[in-house]
Image (cartoon, rainbow, N blue to C red; front, top):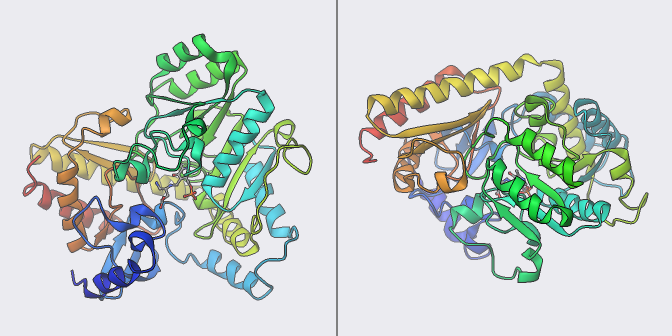
Length: 430
Ligand code: KE4
């Protein structure tokens, strides 16, 4: 892989952007390679300034479920650009996208759009605290809900990738009401609520963990959270920023049959443009200003081009439900390939997967919690990632990030990825 332009861009970027990036994971600090200088994406592939082409499993960390530049999305955005970018007034596109989400997600009667998953999470926590009159919130180790102070305790994603315990600048008071438990540990949640359930406003959870690599919920875990929170009058918040409209059109809550009180969305509902959203019952959501007293606002919330993009993407997914079967088949092909290759190489490997969210964990046999995945062989992952870069496979540059497939990936893309994985395993000492 040629990378002189990538190196030049990184050097220039590091002079004006901290770490040369606008989001830490893009700095490739946990892997040997240099982040490619991507100039164009189409379908499942991206092209860089050095003339390399990659099959893309980053997909901007989730939005591009339909691949890069899906025609319906591009056309919708182009049409909106001809009308204007932002007006500071409600436009029909916002209402249409909200109606699609309300129609798709049974637990959601109203939504509020914001411009990131972080804003959605912080707003939902504020609403849960206001609605219950309680302060404490429960999150799970390795769970990532954006970078708002209260939620940065033992977070996943970039915090885990960089191995930083939390973040300087977050006052102890900001996380004093945040309780962190092990993911998939229903008993720990039950015991906590027995001790202090009447002080807990909400449990916030990724229904499929995607920010410690892909870790599916253990059988009964999500139903257990629903039962416990209902019993104690706490709210259950599903962070579906990554899983919403990805693992099923109705999200993970439809897939697992658990009805949360509040849901977060992002990524797919913006199809690559900045969007976040939180939603729930009318009784809860009408407590948000100006209907109610809980304040939240945003200059570019409900951005018309972003609403156009998300609306077009959801239309394609709703009109073609077979796309979810296709995504699951591709994900299974990738998982089966990884498992067969690891078996043939006599290497320990467990693959976390739900639909088109996939992560191979090298050197461990099970990945049920953050403690489990922290035991994975990150050095071997780094060598695998570098080999994939050389082979034209763009994989998230961290063991603690989920890879994604799109409806434009082909069996050949997947097979090429597995072949490179197999070749590398024979050289990687695990
Ligand atoms: P943003 O503020 O980055 O839009 O969303 C935060 C967020 C909230 N909840 C979940 C489940 C998420 O996955 C995210 C963001 N995901 C990461 C990928 N692990 C974004 C990538 C990045 O930080 O650059």
